[in-house]
Image 1 (cartoon, helix red, strand yellow):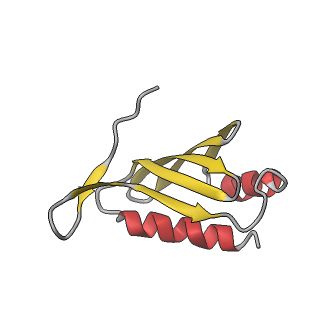
Image 2 (cartoon, rainbow, N blue to C red):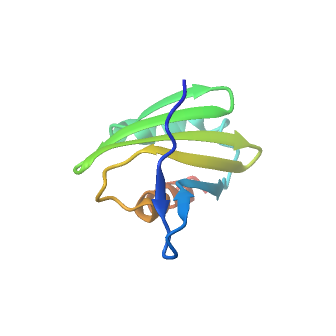
Length: 103
């Protein structure tokens, strides 16, 4: 399935994508059950297919979606859907906080 790339303009007016990388603190596959349980607590849907994870959730301002590709302990996150009023930096920050809880 092709998902249109969501972009934004940086302070210089250059179009950027909503991709970012996260260093995973642990082997996520060994703790997948904990990840699923935490996601369910926040009404987030996770679909795992090998090293790819599709994420869908809702915020008070609208739907949020992401695709995550994991290689070793590096996760590349691509935001595929977000409310206009929610900055990409907030989504990235919340993901980083969630991962810190796994350490």
